[in-house]
Structures are given as C-alpha cells and as structure tokens.
Image 1 (cartoon, rainbow, N blue to C red):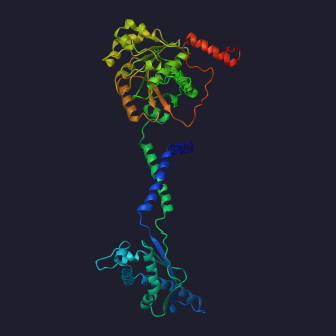
Image 2 (cartoon, one colour):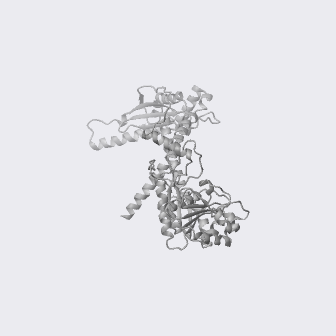
Image 3 (cartoon, one colour):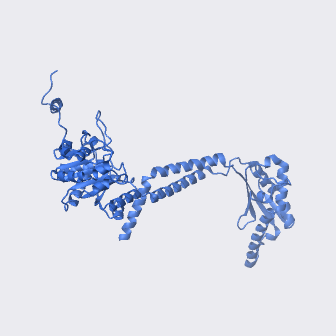
Length: 510
C-alpha cells in the first residue's frame, strides 16, 4: 500500500512538473513544427512520382485447366520465381546503362545533372539510377507495379515509359521469346511532389519539439537543487521546518506610497499568509518554551531571501498575541526595518552598542503598544566586531528584562560573520529560504558555518511558497493585524462625515 502511495505521489510530481512547464512544452512544439515546415518547404528538394503497371505473360507460367493439385502448386511456385526473375532482369546493369544513355540523349546533361550524377563516361551510375526505381509484384499474378521517384517529374515519367517500351526486349532476351510485357496506359505526368510531406513533417517536428522540451524539463528539474520540498529540506539537514509562507502579490491604494517591503499591517495581505505567520508564531513559542532566554535571530543563506520581512512579521504576530516584543535590526550594512515600519533610522543598535547608557533613547515605539523597534542606527566601520563585542551581551541582558521576546534581524550567513556571532548569543537561529530559489549548495555552506560556530538552529522558514491553491481575496472587515495609525483631527472629522453620508443619519447642507 505504501509503495502504491509513493508511486501516486511520484506521478503527481511528474504531472505537476509538466503542468508548470507547459508553456515551455507548447513553445518547443510550435518551434519544432515551424522549423520542420520551413525546412520541408524551402530546404528539401521536392521529389515527383510516376507509376506504371506491366502485365507480363509467359507460356511457361500458364496454369492449365485440369491439372492436378500438386501440378497447380508447382505452377504457383513457378509463378513466384518468374516474377522475381522479371524484377531482377529489369534491374540489371545493362538496362540501367541503356536507360542512362536514353535519358541523356533526350534531356541533355544540363537537365539531368540536377537529378542524377553524371560520371566521366557521361553516364548515370547504375546504382544511383536503380535507387529511384521500385518494382514489386502483385501476389499470385504476373503484374509488376513500377514506381519511379526523382527530382524531376518529366524524368520520372520518361523512366516509367522507357520500361513500357523496352521491357519486352529485355525479358525476351533473358527468358525467351514466349515472354510478353504489356501495359495498359503510359505513365502520367504529375507535378504534385510526393516528398517532402509538409503536413507529416510538421507533425513530426512538433512531436520532436515536445520530446526535446520534456527532456529539457526533466533535466532542469534533475539539476535544480533549489528548495522545493519541505520533507527533503528537513531530512537533509535534520532540522525542522517551522513554517511556510505563501507567495502573494500586494496591492496598494491609489496615492499610497509603495514599499519594496510588505509586512502584515498591509490590509491587502491574503488571509492565508496571515495564518501562515500565526502558525510560525505557535512553532516559535513552542520551540522556545524550554529556554530561559526568548531571543531568536532571523537570517538567510544569501541576500534577498525575505529574512527582514519575515523577522518583522514574526515580531508583529508575537506582539499581536499579547507579548512584549522588541525587533532589533542588526543588519548594520543594509538595514531595512526602519523602511518597513517607516521610522527614523538615526540612533539605533550601533549607537547603543557604542554607549549602552543611551539604549532607552535608541528604542523607538511603533503604533503597536506591544512592539518596539531598535533600528540599525548610524553607519559604522566595524559592524562585525561591534555585534560580537561584550557590549552586545550586556545589551541583550538588559533588554531581556523588559521584553518577553526579542527578534534580531541579522545579515546573510554566507556573506558576513555577523549572523553566526549573534547566533551564539541567542536561544536559536531561524533561517529563511526562498522557495525554488535558494540552492542546496548555499544552505550547505550556511549550515557548515552555523555548525562550526556551534550555534543553535531552531528551524527553517520556507518563504514565497508557490502552490496551486488560490489565496482568497476576502478581507474580513474587523481583521486588523496592527492598530491603525492615529488620525489627525481633520482626518477624524472627514471620516465621521463620510460615515454619516453612508448611514444617511446626517446630510450636509448645500
């Protein structure tokens, strides 16, 4: 039963892979068909066919009435032998030489050269001429079906008619005077080419394109070592996947300033993504339940995996759960948390590490009562040394007294040592990987660093997961991830006027 289930899963993965790359398969099929059609029309020389039926009679092959069964059987065998003999005679080199001379005499060498090769003796090679002639016998008869295919329709007709005129002579010379070859009609001129078959070749080109695209798709999938499967990621590194965040596109209202970082306080974030982060919150709380310190760092193997937005959203969901949370932007080289929360970058972690007495002045409030931000602060020349210093330990000890959870946004592990230096000071690290983009090689390198520094890995978060499920566009009217920013008196007055207009309780006077 388990094997059957495994096979079903494999087939599902194959069909899913084909469906995801269906555009590529269709593109290759169209390209293959177009190429095959163009080659057939413009690059392959057309060939033309002429055909003729020869009726060969021989007194030796006539089955007499009244013959016994054994005699009739012998006559049938003789009939087969005779037809094979006729074919061999008509394919003889002597016939080919005479025909070659006749063709050159009739059409001239200039007309024959595009169709056949002409040797030094001004003859068409017998084998080349013979390769254009197809003779076969109709079973149990003395009828020979003659077919000629060349690059010139007139030459094809001429070869057929040559057999119609001279077959008698060659057969009588080889077999005897009792052999007579007759024909009903002359071979007819046909200027419709039998080759290439454009429709057939186009279809074959499309099939070839499909096969090549399938091979390419499977090779791409085989050599793609990016993160694609939760179980594979977890088993490979013996580390839990504590959450998955779905892919989504964010809307912005007209006139609203667009941001390259989207956090959960954007009301257009799909409901399912919000639930993804709530599930991550539950996993983090459970993972930290046995630790005295509730401090975690969030990093990634490479930049642009979404670790800063993930850290911000983890902090938001923890604060929404009633916990006092501090989000620290420890990516001193490329800080972004001040952009996400739209706060001032000045006076932050770098300033606090330089002078711990200024720590309280560096912490900034957000419009969530339970969430504070410690931005990166002023640029420094030695960020790695700063976050690895004893002041960082003292700072975390001091902050731990005020906050239930501390989330630290750190640089990419493979680029700087900041992430692993901080990871040694916290309860655990969460690594964010981007679905189908972060490679196993990048994760291997990051995990080697983490193990070398003996940092604790809490787990992975797979970001930007793309599934076949469509996220609902419904936004619950009372669903608010973060409290709305405080309104000015003018904004509040306009809101009340609009509300009265909608309810009809009050109408402005004209």
